[in-house]
Length: 275
Ligand SMILES: [Zn+2]
Image (spheres, rainbow, N blue to C red):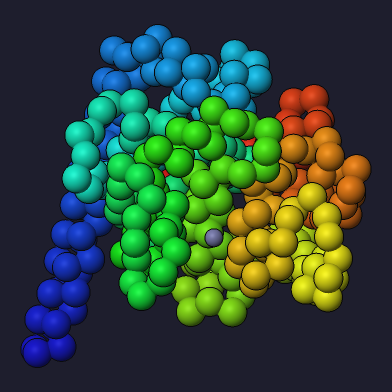
């Protein structure tokens, strides 16, 4: 009898939570559809203006990018710290995440629910140097002035938006990290495609090798990865010439290559029902 009640309770709890999940998905889908229908042209113009990656896509891929950006944005909570929110801010920040994961099936970085936006460089913890951004258990943090500057100077290999999104993507996928394994597809590619080559270059840099990644990349392996991402997107040609194996490894990991016609290595099927 007792076990029967417990069983019933379990069914109700599981059934209830999946119904809530279904309702939430339905609500998000409606919201995204409404935004897409009503503001498509305005959002397209904003992305074209600020995001060079988006500007260089063909029309079909731009449409896919915009949809993913709206979905990503709808699933996150944006908190503006001591600054006024404007509509384009969360759109552009979402676009940085979508750029990084554009070749991946699993693009929502769903470990993170909160994105904090500060007006400019800020102090964090006991560190003396001001931060432009960081990622921690409770969310992704970005400074707005540095975010904008990074996209305005889009060829110096320095981009705080892409840098922090790279940390966020790795956060749940680094094998040594406690949250590792939440995205198995990515993690598999991480092992296979990136880590062997990446570790080798990183070790050489720690031993003193200089290359286009710059000395900050030798700080630790996490920074190395984030700096790789910045250079992969902002200076793909020089990256490929200087470190061809590492460049190829990142292409495989992210399933995209900016120097290739059509960008993707393998086709990506969008299945929006998963959010
Ligand atoms: Zn970093």
